[in-house]
Length: 304
Image 1 (cartoon, helix red, strand yellow):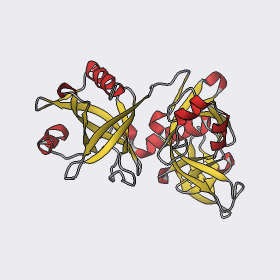
Image 2: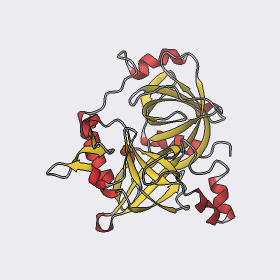
Image 3: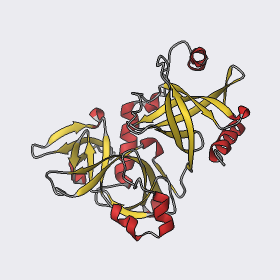
């Protein structure tokens, strides 16, 4: 039945979603990377909270940037133009150069601060749970206080734990974080509050027969993050802008949702989706503000 809806929901052109021109890689990266390295510079002491638990805050600092897999340990390794925009990243003894236009992956290296969990009381340790905060796919929200400029925040995803064989931080336990540039904000308050949820869904991808069982783990105003449900399962290869459908059955007939989404970000175990609309009574319709509130309320109260 869902197969017949893919054409209606995504159009005859297929599953690709067109983004505005200002979201082109060069324009998007240049502006966001400049803001990121301005408010989250190497060597700056920061605060962070794991998995959107804003009552659990730890200290950390940025030790290096990782550009396309190469580590930069100093801000002096970044060339800028007359307006202050980064143009080239330099690394290695041979001063190898990576232009911003060639940037494919920008990550942050931070120390493994798992030991700080032992300083928490029992209740807050239980909130983090057995999974620990730096498991691959977990989210770490970084907070940088820039004085008169305001407070900058960015959500990052744990890429992996690393122990570098050389360099100034060789043989030390570190964590590599991949920032979600779309969440970068400079303000006194977070632009989007994320609510933690645990609700089962199935992911449907055009031209893929087998649906994938997943779990929604958090939701903001119009976005959700989901994780593969089965241990060892891998999220399908999805690109930003790809169209998918998710089905959520919240236990009652009137609370069964078939939702059209667009992919924002994908990792091996997780995927962040932009909610677009739903299929109701055989027809596709965009979400109204009330529809989104109803969906959020249902997800927050699933199983209760």
